[in-house]
Image 1 (cartoon, one colour):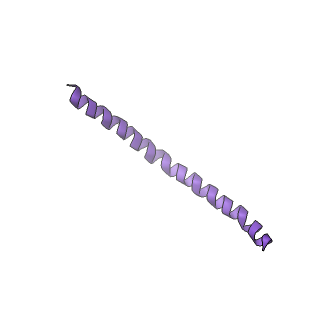
Image 2 (cartoon, helix red, strand yellow):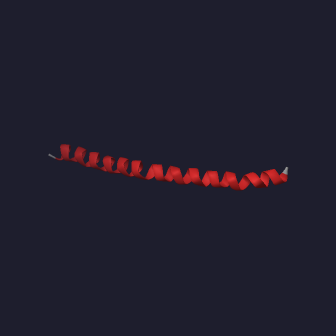
Image 3 (cartoon, helix red, strand yellow):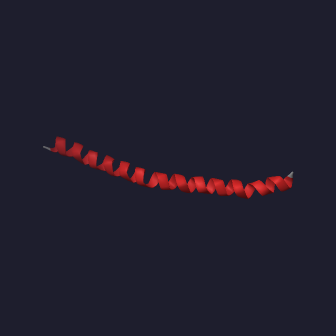
Length: 51
């Protein structure tokens, strides 16, 4: 009896992990992209002034 239940439990856990990953990863990627663009924009004038 515990055989099928174990697989159902694993499926639920994997489903929850996949759901959180799909929900949080795009937001995290957007934040990272925003931070990198901000850093590039901040560094650009400094590099131009250095030249």
